[in-house]
Length: 405
Image (cartoon, rainbow, N blue to C red; front, top):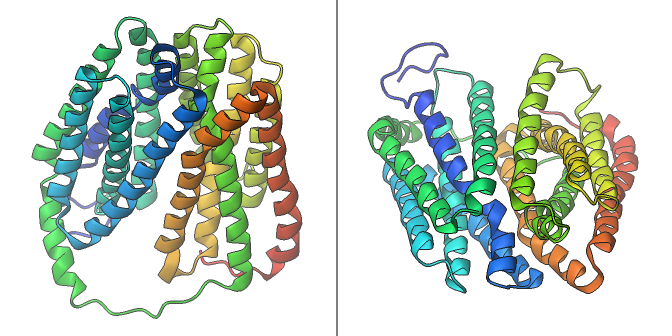
């Protein structure tokens, strides 16, 4: 296999086919999650607390799927693993189209969560096998494709929801069928890659594991806690906010349009940060700016009663997402020794997953007991507290940190 960037290799998957798979799966997934809370609450009359449990199960499934997929990718041939994952996801979505009552919807959503984590991890893992392009370029393209899929999916779902929920599930299933066919014909080079990986593994040199320095570890834990708390609140935009907006008389397709706005701004911000990489003096400044935007966005929600104000809140929120979320794993990477970078990047995913798993449940309980406005204040205060903790901690530790570029 050719390992130098820019050289042709017959033994690796072409990047365009990974992009096709990423687009198809994310458009399909974006047909499901925006409508879940509204559908369960307005059509099946399920309480927000129970909806929080449903979404919790979905996120736990995603975490388990990610962990298992990463484990099996390192040890087994990835080709059948990705085929089984995408194929089963298509089957489950067809079953959702036929049976989407209660509690079967809960069961299907949990399974799709597991398969989503499985497929997402495998696609990212397959991307690591590409040697024709630099890794940063490959993952930037995949991240762009993911957000393009979200833009497309959320733009369509709001209009099709008013027409037919069944049709949404059928279209989502067909998109996964496209991803499956794409994988069958275009992911076969991974078989050869796996064979070479097994052969090379036997001759590799064992490298001594270097523990993360104590000060690095403390700051890293602060980042993980901030990430978990931020996702804990952010997930309510994907769940309980849809119910709130509909209750104010705003059509569901307008809520869906907010996620198109979200993904569009992320894509634009990616371009700006790539063009002006020194817009922020340090990664820490970028993180603090992003977390501050998250806190401000929830304050603006207190006063939001029409679509324009919700759109303003989403813009502020997305500025936070587009700056803080990419910067945290980048800083964690600098703090991690070369022998444990994968471990701590995995821990970053776990921190996000914990926040995603408990977010709808936490928000649902607070909203059911106190209402939406008190929840917005709670969310803003808790996120702001993360800034209060991180700034003095960073000022105390930053000159003594060990950076691993």
